[in-house]
Image (cartoon, rainbow over all chains, first blue to last red; front, side, top):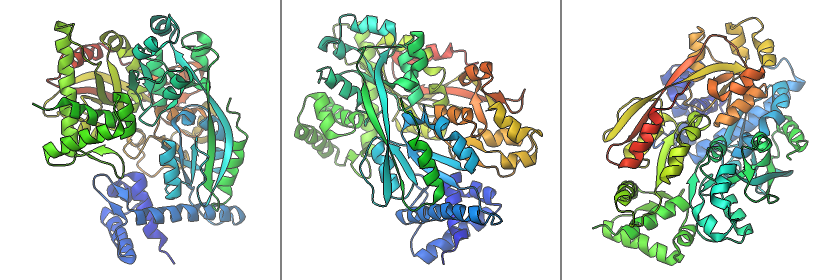
Length: 289
Length: 289
């Protein structure tokens, strides 16, 4: 049988970001924590974490953390039938896209998590990285735009988010007074979330434009909207995120009637008990538009 | 003299996240881009980038990118006295804290960047990582809570951001009906931005509580506020970010009258021309509270 005290030490170090804080969290000295990690590495015959360039689990350490999370979720189910059994509130580690977190996510799952006593450990990731984390067992679920199946996981479609090409009216007057032509797109700065964000490129391709365009890079959903509101550029923004600015006339579409639909899929481990299953039921009921 | 075509190929690969897209951006074939990188590596006698586990510059490549950015900023100044000289719009790479980007940042520098024709390349980082990036030359400036001086950079204080411990009234009724005691803090879930976020710990220490507490992890400013609004936890939120929710009664302080002040400092390269100096003048005029 695995010694779960050792796995818990490893998990706490990763959650707290260091040996000293993990010791505080578990009520142990730093040297006691180090001893547990050493004991784990001796049993395993290989390291479970690295300290440089940043504190991180090794692939073997990651598999142990994955296993621990699955055991904790199953213990949780056990506790519902054996209420006198004391189990810690499980932390559900979920990768999701920034725009969902900035819009509908919390309001949709808030009641469920409160009632079930779930603590969330959210990770914001591009879909490729998010799915890789699910495959590696680093997260128990992943919310993203890809329907690519992952072995051992179920995939449920949640609907689509609608993105509109938005800017301030003053920005539109300045750069698009003559319509959406090649000359305008060459001059008008866009806003792009990061190197993997292709929404602006897709919108331009829709408009028949395939050339280069200037853009700001801003890897934050709310920062993205703030840059657009400050008149720095246009960008594809979820309609639900800009509802107030659209209603108030602070932002407007540079191409009225045009939109991009981005599907969302919920991937989650198959054998992780009722907590994830319950969360999934809640997510399936969400109205994204 | 350095061959800047080669450096530009390297910079474009990093900006676009790949050789193929960099080729498209520069109007070159993928093999032409690869040849430029090979030529650069032969001259330098060492690699300038790695492809695994993720595409990234080597330390030597990073020093080249740093140098290229500085040259571009100086070219920009030259172009103001020689307006017929054609220079590309420079992209200013800046590390900043998530809460500034989610609140005052864009509105404060929007006019300046628009007039100066600056494109921003923003990187959201903890202060330690942000300052390290400045030291490594990966960013030209860093906005963070640390006043720790960096060689070659100037440091300007910008004021303080005020954080309040906020939750929904229903949450406060449920967990803090009996005041802010040890029993309440042991039960009430907090929201923590990430392993390096110590604001909640500092607030609890202010209240005389030093024990463990349950918490959600949410590495997104807006996601943080969304979790609080959904009643999942309490957390330290910038007053300016929650102004509407405070006025509307949707969020309230769990400890009225208590606040934490977080100072902000603007670190930037000394010898990078007028563009950064102009941006600095604008930032010095910002009213943070």
